Amino acid sequence: MKIKKELPYLLLILPAFITYTILTFIPLAMTFGLSLSNWNGSVIKDLKFAGLTNYMSAFSDVRMTTALKNTLFYAVMNPVCVTILAIPLALALNSRMPTRNFQRAAFFFPSVPSILILGYLWSYIMSPMEFGILNKFFGLFGLDAIPWLSSPKMAIWSVLIVSVWSMVGWHACIYIAQMQGISSDFYEAASIDGASKAQQFFRITLPLLRPAVASSTLLLLTSALKVYELPYALTKGGPGSATTMLTQIVIQTGFINKKYGAATAMSIIFCAIVAAIGFIQYKVTHKKEI
Image (cartoon, rainbow, N blue to C red):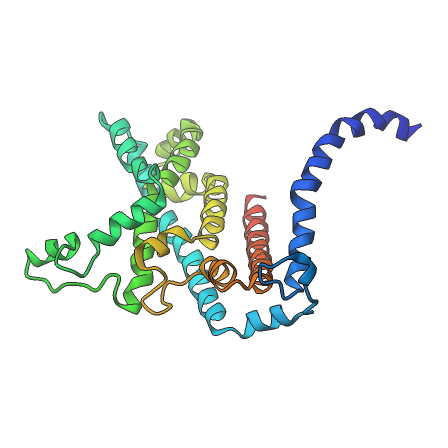
């Protein structure tokens, strides 16, 4: 009887389930199968089973470990820097200034163009050559030129600066939306009790921003782990391997070196890392919200 009652509902979700299976589960299963082979892009019938060789090679590959370190550093620093800057910016833009709408649009605009276009634009701005706008500006004050993109130590920070610049306005809008949902009664009661503006921020605003912080951090974290266009446009992964990310290694291994089996193994490792970090981040933020 129970099955008969649920049958109409099961039939309703059946098309979506079939579509999801065809477009998601089957490709995932095929990808995992290819990761256990020596496929080099030739016909499928020439495939040979390679076992876990591709996975062991990935973990012993110096390029892979270096790219993993760069990706994790970027994935940690990007959300931290954006959040630290976006919350004060949201506070400022949430005030009743006459030009607040224009200012919001101005800070939001860097997130509109393609990140690839922004990367090429900033590669000229930060160029160590004579046409580098940023070093020209510093030269007006008698300061030495900074090797933004040519120094291994500075390059990853330069990528981070451009990324934060392009994202901080967009994420400030998330915090503004959350702030506008906070009742003014809380602040009025706090003012009557003699609470200062700083106390109101740390005791009222910041705790009530936790849902927005969780959403913003998750978006930043997942996008940072998958980053490819920005470091490629700025430095092509250099100098050396200073800004090489996991996605770039996967693409080089698969499409340039024609080692598709090894590339799929790297992709699965990469997906597992993203899923694990995302799960931990969700558990931490969900626990705080409760």
